[in-house]
Amino acid sequence: MVTLTLLDPRHRHPLRQWRFAATRQINVGRSKHNHIVLRDLLVSRYHLELRLVGGGPGQWQWEMNSIGSNGTFLDGHWMRVAALRDQNMIQLGLTGPLLRFEQLAPPRLMLETDCEEIPTTACLHLGNAADNLFCIHCGEPLQVLKTINAYQVLRVLGAGGMGTTFLVLPPRTSSSRPQAQVLKEMKTEILRIPKAQELFKREARVLRSLHHPGIPKFFDHFSQGHTQYLAMELIPGQDLEQWVNRHGPLPIPKALNWLIQACHILDYLHDQSPPVIHRDLKPSNLMVRIRDQRIFILDFGTVKEASLLPGTRIAVEGYTAPEQGLGRPQIQSDLYGLGATLLFLLTGQSPLKIL
Image (cartoon, rainbow, N blue to C red; front, side):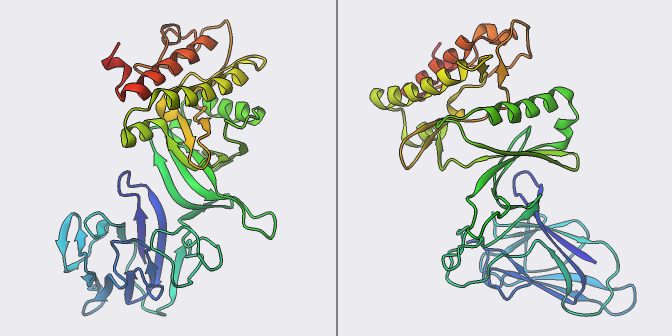
């Protein structure tokens, strides 16, 4: 059996997988006529052939033949024709999709179609651009990377030390197509830390209770296996760190307008009983929605209800109030983070370089 796994190029975690139990040739490319369809601009319509070659029992060998215009790299080296070994890394184009090749057992030659693809391409209509998420004809997703508890994963939005966020379609509950959401996954190894489990569950519990136009809506919190997930509203926009890095420092009126919006959200949080302290206010956790310039506060992973008892020390250099660094955050601590954010918006520099 041969397994080909599509990997995230940066973090090498699996995005999609195909298993071939009995076939002599596997075609890879952008055209729907391939066994493995990869809609990427660096992938040719017919980019790669994997063929079973050899002369006798126990001597079968898989070989790759690169026919794409952008070339194919085997374990980082450009190759046109090469023999394959278990755990080889195949990259289509210099920075294109990355596939891991695994030969799990000697092949048994039966039917060309005896293969399992996990999952399958959801739509095969022609005329869609390579970077489209949904078909322009039927509106269905063009590619589903995998399925998590009936959530269809369309794209990896980000990955960090705590976990991964995905763009997903939630389970269909009516005849109309559901709106895309954000699914936050906590890493299994992080969940083994009791404090991390507590923070993730607290984030879900607090978000479930909050209802404000400047806070992403909470939809679902569930476990699958030993992994926990949190589904939230998708905010199409850009965080303020990205905005400043792309467009430069903000004019004073725009910066004040956005920060005043953030203050209204904080006023709502601090008015809860008990008050809710965000504890992680910084430019990358403030999002501006493109269509109406509305500000949202994101990432409630370190949120805490106000208490007289000392808590975990949560600190972000340049944006953390002194009392929060000592494990005693107050509602004023969020205002400190917001003030440091204003400094970044106006100057484009980290507060550490200025203060």
